Image 1: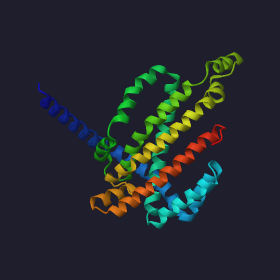
Image 2: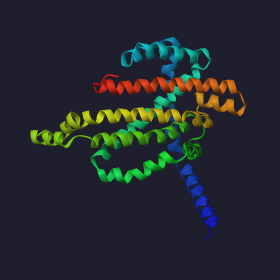
Image 3: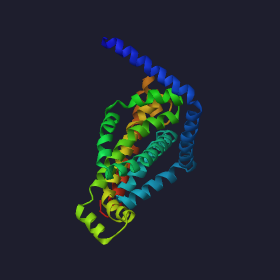
Image 4: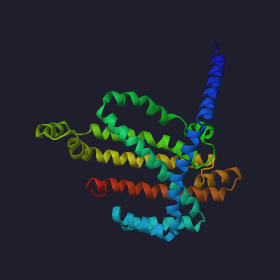
Length: 282
């Protein structure tokens, strides 16, 4: 059998399987879509309910507490810039998408990472799959999601969650395995329970790595924002995608600036939160 014949058979099998799943799982996927869009809508409502200056002041206050005064001023000014460019609704929509996807990715990734940290065989079993997810072009995940969920925020969320999960799993697993053996032996000699061993010994040592995983998941989610605009996710991604299609260079640059602002602000805050949570000064 030549390669083209094999490719035709594989493509036909893939289309048939996807069609069967779509036809027989319509009710399930409608429910998944409504849940995802409900979560996204709730977070977006909270962000849009407050005036832009309230959001900017909250971000500046958090930045002052976790980073320093200069960062607080710069972050507040950067968010005011997003408002002055007329992209505040799109900025909040993007932030809601990223926060929702990252939260879902952490809910999935951290428990799996903890299990992989305790089981080296599970960790080795998952490595090829995580490598595959991280090396495939991100837009690949949009295609089956469109077929099953249609266009809209739910499809963007699914694709973004898939991209954001691997860092959480990898770094959580690494953190669990980083617990020094002498502390584990000390805990066992003290007669503490397995739960006490986890919460009092393993988790504190794993926390820096877990926080790094949260930061990396957040950054991966931002990297998916522009691509997700293709499926009508709304926000800055859709703004940039529409501007590119119409060759509106100014709008695409403004959208890119707003994404850079959000990314840098949240990246710095989460990095500082990791140091603050582990008792280290930035």
